[in-house]
Amino acid sequence: MELRVITTLVLALWVSGAFRHGSGASPPGFWELLVENSGVSAMHMLVSHTNKVLIFDRTDYGPSAIRLPHGRCRNDSSDLALKIDCWAHSVELQIPTRNIRPLEVLTDTWCSSGAFRADGTFTQTGGWNDGARVVRHYNFCEDCDWTEQPGGLQRPRWYASNQILPDNRVIVVGGRVAFSYEFVPGDGHLYSLPFLRSTSDGRSENNLYPFLHLLPDGNMFVFANSESILLDYKNNKVVRSYPSLPGGARNYPASGSSVMLPLLASQRFQRVEVLICGGASKTAYKQASSGSFETALKTCGRMVVTDNNPSWILEEMPLPRVMGDMLNLPTGEVLIINGAQQGTAGWRFARNPALTPLLYSPSSTSSSKFTTLASASIPRMYHSTAILLPDTRVLVAGSNPNVGYDFSEVLFPTELRIEAFSPPYLDSYFDGVRAEISSMSKVVIGYNSQITIEFSVSVLGDTEATLYAPAFATHAYSMNQRLLKLESSTPVLDENSGYYTFVVRAPPTKTIAPPGYYMLFVVNSGVPSIGKWIQML
Image 1 (cartoon, rainbow, N blue to C red):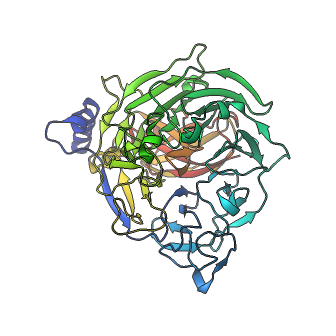
Image 2: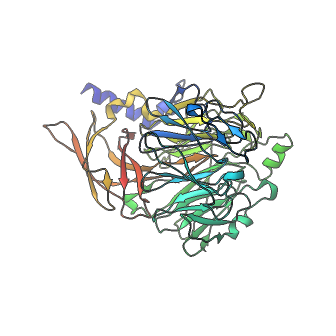
Image 3: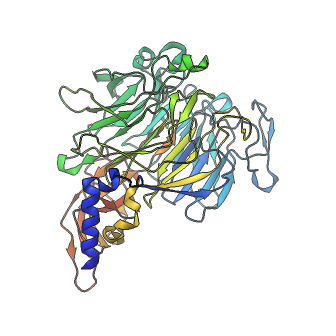
C-alpha cells in the first residue's frame, strides 16, 4: 500500500511537470559511459533482434582505432587513403556485455543508407567511390561478416535514403545528383523523380537524405529541403503535393530531422502525422564554407499528411538545432538529441554543440510540448548517431567532423566513446509502475492476430502495448523507424500467479507494419517495460 501511494504521488508530480520544470530541480534523464573506445566512429548505427549493435564508418579515412582480426588486411586499389588496409571500419557491439568485434567491409560505405528485411538481415546500399553502386548484407550470426554485391544498384547512391516496403523490397531514393529511385532487389529499372531536382539549392543542395515515411495506404511521403509530396512509387506517380514548410531547409546539409508520430489502433492506424524539427537556412552551408556559422533553426513543423487540406503547424524548440537525431520512444514521445546550434553538416562546418536533449510530448496540452533534459558532456557533432535499445535506453555514439581520425589540436576531435542516455521514465522513482513481461503466447505474429501477454507490475495504471520498428541511424535521420499503439484489452490479474494478462491485436496489414522484427513494449502509466522482440510475418 505504501509503495502504491508513493508511486501515485510521484506520477502525479511527473504529469504536473514538477519533475520536468520544478524550481531548482535537476533536469530529468541521466547519462552513462558504456564504451571508452569503440575502435570505429559511429557514422552509421543500428540494433538488431539479436541485441547486437552494428556500427560502421567510411573505408577511406585511413587508420581507425581497431585492427582487422587475425592479421587480415583489405587490398583495395581504389581506396584513396590506404591501398593495403589492415584496419576495421565496422564493428559489432554486443549488448549488454559491451564486447567489440571488428568486421571487414570491403567497399566505401561513406554516407550510405540501409534497412532491415523481414528475416532480420540488414541490407545496406551505396556509399562513395568503389562503394557507390554496391549492395551489402549483414546477418547477425555469431561469426558473420559483411557480404557485398557489386553493381547491385542501377546508379551511384551517395546520401540516399531507404525504406523497407510491404513486399520486403527496399526502395532507395535520391542521393547526390541522383534524381530518381530504384529497388533492392532490383527490377532492372530506374524511376525518375523530378521532385528531387526541383528541391536542390544548387551547390548547397539541402535535399540529400530525403525523409521517407511509408503511409498506411501504401504510398510514400517524401520530404526534401522544405517541400514534400505523396509518391505512388509503384506507378511512379506523384499523388499530391503538400504546402512548403517555412523557415529554411531541413535536409542534408541543412540537416534537420523527421519522425512519423505514433500510428494509433484507435484511429485504425489511418491518421498519419509527421514531425520535422531543426535545420538551417538555405544559405547556411555557403556561409559555413566561408567561416561564418549561422544560428540553426529553432522551429518544428507538424502536419497531418492524411488530412484533406493539410497544413504545417509551427512550434518552437527551447534551443536551435542542426544535425539532431529524433527518435520515437516507446511512450509515444519523441527524443531530440545530438547536433549543434550553429552551422550545418560538413567538415568542421558547425559550432556550439547542442548538449541538451529535448523530450517532445505530442499529446501534451501545455503551452510548450518540450521538456529540457539532462545535458551531455560529450559534443556529438557531424557524423554522430543515436538509436533506441530494447531496454528503453538510447545509445549515443559517433561525431567526427574531421577528414580522418583526428584526436588532437582540432575543435571537435574524432569521438570513439559510446554512451547510453536514460530518458526520464527510467528514473528509479517509477520502478513501482514499470511492468515486466514474463511471457507472450507467440513471438512470430501474423497480421490481425491476437497475442496474449503476461506481465507483472506493483502498481497497475493505464496500460497499453506499443510496437517499434528499429531504425537505421545516420546523418540526423533514423530511417524506417515507426511506432504503433496497439488495440488491447483491460489487464486481468491472476490471483494465483500474481501476474496480469491482457490480449493485444497485431496490426492488420503490411502497409501499416512492414514484415520484420519489432520491439514490443508494455507501457504502464507512461512507463515502458523492457522490450521483447517479435517478428511480423
